[in-house]
Length: 432
Ligand SMILES: Cc1ncc(COP(=O)(O)O)c(C=O)c1O
Image (tube, rainbow, N blue to C red; front, side):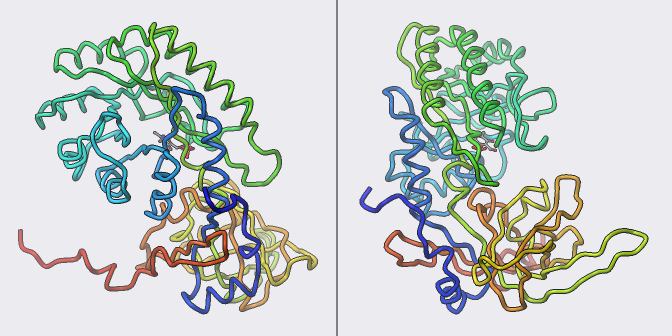
């Protein structure tokens, strides 16, 4: 890498953010290249031992600019839809399954899935026996990966819990033997076994889960004569509230131990993979929004009054707080260091839940902030993962621009604001 991997001071510079707002309007997303590169370097460190490979779960942030950054760093892709596969292909990742640079992990095949598997030849990672039937019906000839639900796991909220009886993902571990028989009957060699047991758990939990998963996989691996790789999934946490950084050394030794255990279990060298999404990008992007008004409600018999900062960004731009009660750090660069008071930050949408300062029980969680003034820019931090990626056109609002901030301070508009024409483009009057 030619540029230093460190955060840019410009990202918190009020005058700089105003200069960008003058060019593209508000709200907008700003990605800091140095922060992404630092996270990429961390994951490269984790997977630097021979036989280890990192993927990027591109669902977290599929912008082409970011995919290219991953590709230059030698990171492979975990895709979840036909279109994600096509996006990765367009960004320069190779198709085919030797090696499987793009892994296509689908709970259900839909839309253009066959274009991904049939035309681009990417390795399908199946999570139910029905998907084997889908492959057979489509005339697939080739290898497969098998996603397993090992029966345990934990995420940062219940809906990010991806292993256990309540999880829809993968083949339940006790049913794996049946799927092996079925895949053999259909002539599909299983070249990879895979599990992802939770997005964003605490570090200790992640380490315990990874160890346990490696042991489970070592137990079943000998049943797969064609096995070339084991994936322990993603789930590396990002610390949204600041605090201790992830212990990379501890994690790296868990991965090298897991690799040794798995190679021993099958009696030959195989690849060990991880596929973080959030970790690479969460800290890299901030949503910059304008305070359009400040107003108050007052105490009454229903509850306490609050000060509302009404901003022009809403859950169409960053849904995590409304969806999971997720915490995002908030700052007002022009008022840094001023005294704080509890403020609720709310957006323009028609839902009362369009509030960025909520807790996981859907209640308001006013944030201690300097009292904003109408016209201030406000920044919602750490939104690079599942931020723009989960944005929508609800209320017919266009997705906002994304800007790339290079380490030398130069900026590039990597996607423009969506217009009404973009939103109407897919509507037709076609009789069927
Ligand atoms: C199969 C799979 N792999 C990897 C990830 C990435 O998880 P994280 O962003 O927590 O690293 C996910 C997230 O949903 C996933 O479903």
